[in-house]
Length: 340
Ligand code: FO1
Image (cartoon, rainbow, N blue to C red; front, side):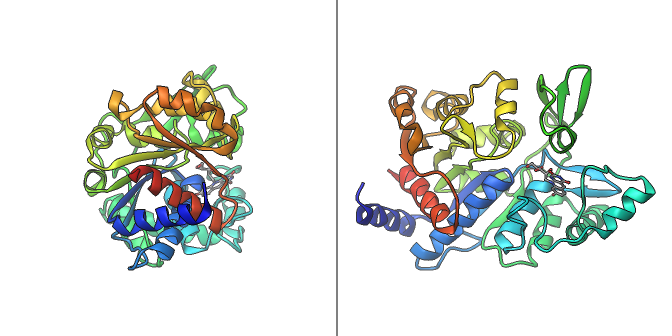
């Protein structure tokens, strides 16, 4: 496609657009949101705002540790949008120190393989303070994020505690233990989202999906991130019936995960690690699924016909978010295909 035409499509799409809601996990979602914010800054007369973009964020990776509530995905997004995340490691704060963690290890509390950085601890202490004062996680998140100029409103998918457990041979463990301690080397038999059946969407989640012009399913883990969000009663239905166009971005490029452990999670639920298989797992909205459109990487363009046959409008574009420019271009592509 010619570049001038693509830019013109992006401009038209964004100017006409009012609200975008992104269902998001941690790192991939954070990079997509940063690109989206940049795309809106470049293409919208108002430059975009927290009223324009809402992220509904997975909380299934959360846990209590050393008396503190840890919310990795909310924090990854917040730090990324604030320009404060450690890009090298992919999680935690830039310029982090680990003095307190050393003390916790010496006292023998917490998980020795899960490091809580000193600056990061400030966030966990603040969140835990609000939760213990009786505020729900959504309100705690609103207060915590108000410190930074994020340009995006972050809402946890639920205020209720939903924690992903991984069933392995001989038992089960918290998702963080399976991933951070064992690096997904123990074969996962299934994932159980403890508490999901009785969880309610946090205030504003259903409205954000229903009132959006475009809903984006970020390139996040389809099982433990997006799967957990959609598992909260009411959210999948809201996505299925919203008048918004729903576009997903494949987390799989050329038959492999970009980062993280989505391949191990997909095998556990019997889904192949391919852009096509993940799209079929989400399903076309016209056939009872949750997506109208799907962006795949150029390297996977051989799957376009099969996607069309599955009732999914698909386009092959560069998916690697290697910098702000490529992330912004991808966000523009997502909006353009949603509105096509
Ligand atoms: N990931 C690690 O690989 N090692 C850690 O010690 C670690 C600590 C940590 C502390 C706070 C936080 O918000 C995230 C942290 N992560 C760590 C990342 C996290 O385990 C996962 O990558 C995500 O939950 C998966 O999206």
